[in-house]
Image (cartoon, rainbow, N blue to C red; front, side):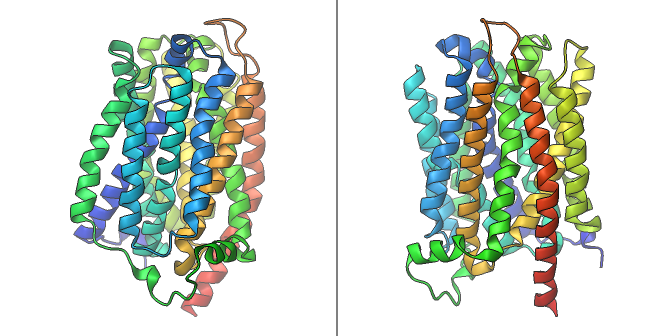
Length: 412
């Protein structure tokens, strides 16, 4: 049976759509900060290391929150958990929209990270509870379109609002949109309680410990550490690199992100189908090789025509999307249903902390000698990113075998 032709019910389509919208707002809240770097650093008078800390503060707080919430994640209806953390995320984003100096912004990112950083683990747990592994690549392809959509719609609009109004405006826009989405979730999403059947562990700490120490799960956690490193090292300084090194005018940044994101929206569902049809690990290999090549090209770029920059960005994000879709689908197959919320919570925590460390280290490696001067040592970040991608190729091979054996036992 070709799983790429499987038809989803109308409610399944709603679940995919609403989770994609949740991811859109959460990812946009995080991603919009990086393009604003070129505006925020001179506007607030902060250094590259301070900006790196603003980015990583979200990740560190998200990591701590994910770990604390993991023990409780499988004890309640996933819908209620989703609503609780989404409400906190909305409050944190509003906080970002009203602060006006460095330290309050740092605190606002911590608050947003505490709630927003857990959203992806909750969403992926719902996906894994609702959809079989055989079609999960397609589902992840649609849900991961949030990253592309945040570029096509959110980042250009965010940059427009920031340059024509104030850098606070994008955060206020995100909070308003999230309020509407949260209301729809409360009204339309059905309770998700399948994981509560047959639960034996009542103590959250014991459940967390059993999940975190399960040898079967440790490979997934180890791979996540390196999966997070690559993007977090490059992303915080990508727009500053485009403006100061490649000499893309600030008022044309939105064009780069819009066209790149539009291409990603088209390729996301296609890549998801290929993951189910040809194999998730095969797609991961393709994405990793493409990403490594494009990272090395991107981080060594000098001034180029805009169309060249856009083509390079499209190729880079195609590789990154291939890795994200395939790895998310594979890793979601590691835990048992009764452990899924805790596993995803721990996994998210590891991802956020690893990404936070990577962003902070990147801020220490990269430096800007003077205002509007070219960034230095960005090529070193490229070498480090490509190295982590190479190592994860090996790690994900063993996870693929592990998940395949597990599915074979289940269907035997």
